[in-house]
Length: 366
Image 1 (cartoon, rainbow, N blue to C red):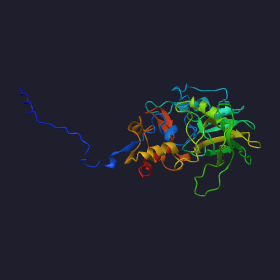
Image 2 (image 1 turned 180 degrees about the vertical axis):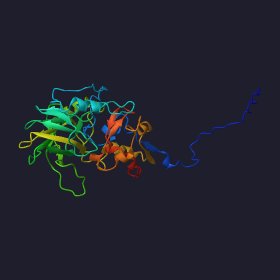
Image 3 (image 1 turned 45 degrees about the horizontal axis):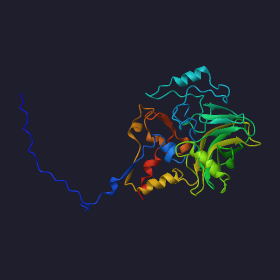
Image 4 (image 1 turned 30 degrees about the horizontal axis):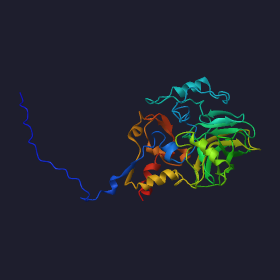
């Protein structure tokens, strides 16, 4: 039998609180933890990209549409704007029987949300052609002049008077010699007013840029809002009702009420009646480094953190080899990187922002 230890003698203790500085606190102890994969902290948050499912790899998984009310997407999805089924039953069966990690839902290759058809267009996901092998799905659009597709953004897209947006996308047609002619539009959700528009043109030739697969080409445009948006106060009121804090902040830094808009891509006169679309990106022209919302970045920078930690642990480990964070897959041009399903927090996560957060530490702490 073991005898209990004798009680420890009580020792005098003293706690003194005062204003005098005993020693300096290291500035390195103050930091930021970028768990950008949670609750749209990166995608739809500090990351300046305005369009969800821009690589067409979401495939019905996760909380992307309906984020303002917390709802999830029902499966399967065959909306009224869906074209003929482009996949055989055997192909669908093979896709759904792929080995998945725990908590990783099967993709639905008929689901292209939150993209939607406009003015009689027909849409479907195509896994037979894409500009880059890492992201094998693209969106096929069929229709006449004026038809096209729309993307609502994350909680809408805020357009301030005088703001500008840089658009980049990859597209192709099915017939040689037939041009892709598109017009990009930011249209007010309330009232349908065109707030900004531009012709989408082939990107200038750049030998150093990544070459897409044959038939695919990169297109760009800059959309600029008028410095004097009519009825901006009325639209701003609608934007504030659209979700948390109103429409997704973006655009110029100047004052003036913002309007809540959606992004549209329309077939222009003389363009191919059918085209494929992939790797669509819309970023405010004033984004810091082309990556960060300026308003959010400047507030983070004002805290002067000693270091930045990223990513979060649950996201890093995932629930298996398919859903873990593979940092090597986040290297290279954003359009050619492969995303993966974020099983820790229940949604796909494109990798464009994945290594940007930790690499930003010097600028945040400068």
